[in-house]
Structures are given as C-alpha cells and as structure tokens.
Image (cartoon, rainbow, N blue to C red):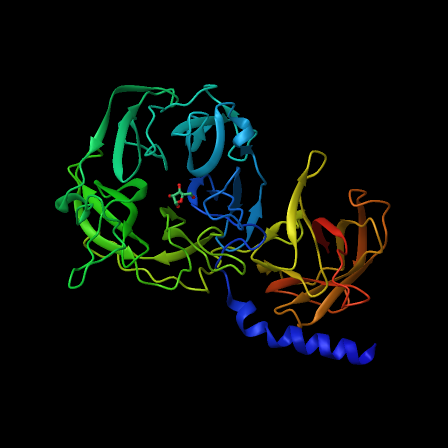
Length: 468
Ligand code: FUB
C-alpha cells in the first residue's frame, strides 16, 4: 500500500508543470463549442453549444451557460435550453448568442426544423441563467434555407437592434424593440473582395487549392457584431489553409458597407475544422472567445471554448491573436468564506458535472487522481479554522483533500467522505484546518480513493466554504 501511495504522488507531481498554468480550454467537464460571451453587471456569461463526439458531423442537442467574475474561475449553470425547448426543432443545436434588453435575456439559437432546413429561434428569460422559454413557439427566421445559422444580435446606441447570421452568405435584419420580431426585408450582404477579402469560388470548396493559387479569405459563418469608438466590427469565421480562421471587417454603420481588415486568428494548432468567435470588453480589458478541438478526446466534433486577452491597436485594428494553453489570468479574487459551488472551476480533471431539480448543478463522476483547481482564493490576513463541503456518495465514498498552490501542495484540510445513503443524499462534512493559510492562493480539491487502481466513481460534490 505504501509503495502504491508513493507511485501516485510521483504521477501527480510530474503533471504539475502543464496543469498549474493551463486555462484553455476554459471548461474541461463538457465540450463547449461556439462560445458567445455576454457582460451583464459584474459577470461575464458564456453561452456555448454541447458537442457530442463520436459522430461524423456536428451532432448537438443542447446549449450550456457558464459565468465568471474574474475570467479564470467559471461557474457551470447547466443546460437551460435544449432542442426539446423548441417544438419545431428536430436536430443540430448549433451556434447561439444571448443578449440582454430591459432586464430580459434573449437567447437566439439555430436548429434544424422538421423540414430539414435550418431556422433561427429565440428563447426568453428574466435571468441570464434561465429558466428560458421559446418566445414564439415557432422560428423567428425560417425560409427553407440551410444558411439560417449562427445568429448574432447587437443593439445600437439609438436602440435599434440588428441580427446578422449566415453560412456562405451573410444576412441581416432589423429587430423590433420586442426583440422577437423584425421589420423590413431580410438583407443579403454580397460576398466581395472589399467586404470579406475574397470570393467564394463556385463549385469548389475553399480548402481545395490548385497549384500556384493563393488562399484568399471569405465570409464562411459565425458572425459577431459589436461597436467600438464609433466603428462597427464584424468578426466571422473566414477561410485559411483547409480550416476556418477568424477574420474581421469594419464599417461606419451597422449595415455596411463592410471593409475587409484581415485575419485575427489563423494557421494555428487547433485540431478543429471550424472556429467561432466573440469579443467583449470586461473590467477594462478586451477578450477574444473562440474554440479549438484541443481538449483530450476532442477534435472537429468535440470542440471547446478558449479565451485570450488582447489589446486593440492604437488605430482600432485587431492584432493577430495566438491560441495559448495558458489563456487568461484572473482579474479578481474569490472569497472562500461564502458558499462556493463545487462547479466553479478554473481547471479540473477526472470529474464532470450534472444537474438535478433539487440542487441544480453539482460535480460528479469524481475519480481517484482527479481534482478541481480554483484560482486566486483570498484567505485574508488570518487563517480560516474550518473547511466544510457538501457531498453525497451512494457507495464507499473517498477522500477530499484541500491543498494549496498545486495538486501536491500543502494539505490544509481533508474530509473522509463516507457512504451517505445515496448519490443525491447530501451531507455537509467539516474538517479543521491542518496548516494555517493566509493571503491569495490557488486551491486544489484533490480526489482520492482507497484503491487507486479501481478508478471507480467516489462521491458527488455540491458546494464548499471556509470559516474563520
Ligand atoms: O457548431 C455547429 C456549427 O459549427 C456552428 O453553427 C458553426 O459556426 C460552426 O462552428
């Protein structure tokens, strides 16, 4: 048994170099393609899809929400909407975006209809995390076209809302103030060299390049509209050497004419054919959200959200942005003396999340060798005296250790989780603080079982707190 324990520590410690700094992909418990960030009050909400790898197409049935106040620790709010939420939708829960107007939240989605075409719908809620309800009971945009995907909505300073969308062809329409109907015609924005850098070559996919030809750019899909210093920016998935890139165009009006500006993110190791982006400013910094296929077991049909901080150039142009593993640094601290959800995570391994009607989202599928890292936890000047965690175990349970600064770092508390009477029979268990801790630290909740080779599910974990 002793030998086994030593082998385990070496295994864990050897992984620290990568683990300690990684922030991308942002979510490790699920696949999260097509991220759409929204700033509301002092938090960023990230709306994403849900790739189900193992199929040879984008088979997706639901949409997820996460939020963060510091850009590093992301809280999982579960699955507020799915294909089942829209009676007219039968398949392909593809890219979506949620925006707020007058205290209501409008989540624009696209999905395949019973006629096998794609349509855009909208769900509404009083809260950014739901519950959401299909606002119309039918699509907002449905006209038999396969191009009705990837809606993005922007409300201009004069209150006029615009919705852009498209695949291969870009469209827009003016939304009414109710945000669930539109006025005027749907306008098609012509593909042109001036607007999007290149032309779609008829009858030939862009990735097939003839000898001596140069790759051009083109609007492919995934538009994202925003305004900065009186210029309108349209970022979108363009085309590079055989995969999508992120490109952008600008205009003096929200309806164009658009002027192509170049590629933002291109020719980088991504392991995914598609990319899909969104840009926000939050607490004085600018962030690009995008996706890659870089999560283990990921790929073109298993994509995950990632984030990079960047600075606009002095002339307002967007620099070329690199995909990184390190992602972004926290821009705030986490208070350990409040109730914290176990599903508030900066990085995790060997666990996943689930939701129940009774308690909402919780961490499940916890295995030996797994952990949850929470970044920049501020213990203050004096040490806490107690740690408590709310857990449930249908079988033997396991050990929940609290360590600081690394998976093998100083252990400050530990809880032996017994069989609680069921996987949803929750018990709050307390540990005294073994080693005093103060100041700001990364906290690791490390999961261990008695028999480390068994790899069985240990316990479920809902929330935690420290007490002084
Ligand atoms: O996620 C399915 C589709 O792939 C999206 O709608 C596109 O933007 C591309 O990312």
